[in-house]
Length: 157
Length: 365
View (cartoon, rainbow over the protein chains, first blue to last red):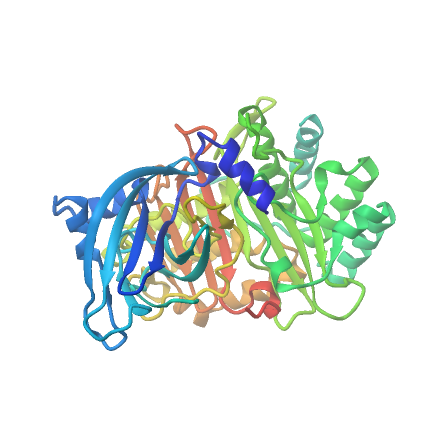
């Protein structure tokens, strides 16, 4: 698998890796007092989602309407979008949002409930993968696909 | 390519596929073939094994594990490698023996599907510049488990755009998951047009067209692929993983909301369209494999509890068009996607699952 997927990364600069429907990834980094996240959203799938929710706002405002975090007992975390940039991955164009998630006073930053339907409110086959970043490695924490919007997330290590 | 085209023409000639017409009757893929059963398939496999060397036998016969069972995909082998006996590596006698296995395990329509889907991959060879494995030879046959025993075993046959997974001696009769795809949708081979999923797409389109006037029949949302298919997990700056059935077991919609329209509310003619559409999938394996499943799906009480819905264009002429049959057990979906090799064209992905008996109930993740 690894060899072939290297082919995918290395040789396939141009045909979307033979997969026309890329998924999203939320990459989390658990820190002492907050969680830093990179949200990789494929432009092609986001376009369908935004067309179905045409409020006309900038992407950070759109994202904050569709993305939240709360404690397991329902207290809201503070969520801010620090930066948005464009990136390519496996021949797909992505929007990358750098997000800071801060728990309410007294709550652990290592456990929360993710509430998200940034793309999945519209694209039925779309999957958001949530991973924890450890240097160059990533632990899979879970996934969301319509109609699910909530995912319990905990730092695995 | 030349060999495959010859086989294609040969199989097509013998498959007794009725010319596509406006008829809505269920295509009979099975006459005049009698059911084969696990024993006949095992005999055909033994004959094939006798023609293989040790290395080939080791690639054909592997243990039945969850990881091996879910190792099918709708991506080319350059993205998701397959295990198993590569059909493109077989000599003439081995190829004939492999075809005898297919003949035992598949109906005439099922064999023709395999041949035509492989031909579609051959059609893409000139476009595979880097390459990622578009080639009709890149289809694989595996036996997971011991086909000589009364224990469970799975016949796994597939490649880029086809996955047949038939379970024998399992907890349940298992004909699924079955994935079918085609890029391009139709193409020319030696002056004749080939359209591997013509029966399925036309039958699903007839269902969508019939129910389109009903508001409830239109599913919400956008579909850029099948919903319960394989998925690639993309972690930026890392190698992607998956591309196989790692999402199994899947959850399915419940209740009445956003599942389309209940078949019980349809006219007799519309119900017949749904029955015909289901049969274009259930008639691909041999009767011994899927006959009981088909009877279960088409039984009046099951059909009454089945939903049909669509999105996009009922004629399946546009990207994002989608049709779904969602019953107590049957789950069939067909989506129209942008093509990869030929971006100005479209291609189909289609999936048949059984909510209860995928992998014959032998994969318990």
